Image 1 (cartoon, rainbow, N blue to C red):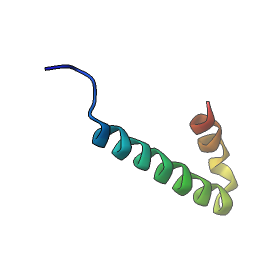
Image 2 (spheres, helix red, strand yellow):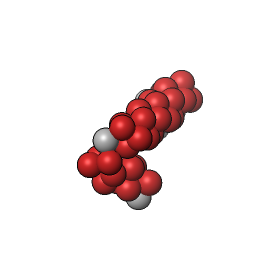
Image 3 (cartoon, rainbow, N blue to C red):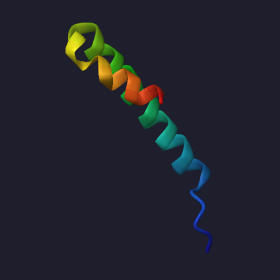
Length: 43
C-alpha cells in the first residue's frame, strides 16, 4: 500500500479548497474585518 492519496481524494480535497475560497471571498465581501482570511488563503 502506498501513502499517496487516490485520484478521488485529490479531487475531493481540490473541491473543498475551491469551496473554502468561495466562502472566504463571500465573507470578505460582507465583513471587511475578515480581509486577512483571503490573504491567508492566497499564500
